[in-house]
Image: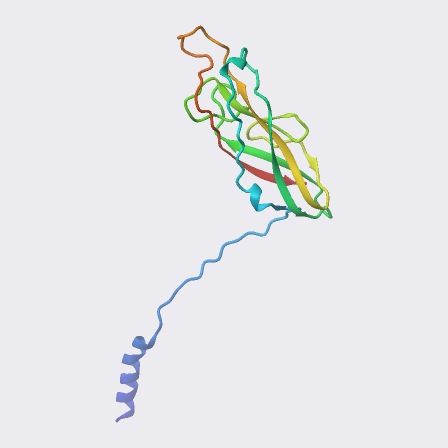
Length: 175
């Protein structure tokens, strides 16, 4: 075979020997975090129970607080010694500091309180809590809070009984 014919045959066959191109897309993020979030705290459920609508006589009346905990693990306070928590979600239309409810009830929102017992405004960070090395448990409270006063039987507005659920996300800010 002549050298130029051999070279021509090699050039024609070369594209057939190439492999397909691909792409590897890697995602991640390194963060400065003093603690890990316990897997059991990644999705919390808080049952407020059966609450009589008759207990809400005025705007601002509250049901009994129900505690819940966000558990932090493997905390190291070498550089970051405190944490604040922000709950965010749909606000109540009548009191934007409260979580809105879904369901058939009307006239209440869901109030959250910080580990120190102070009211948390939805979308704002709680007061700072001091951390310790190791595991930490942040105790919060949830409760219903009336956003309306009572009305006469059969009149629109006021507190209407029914299911009253809420949903919020939370994030942690270490300082």
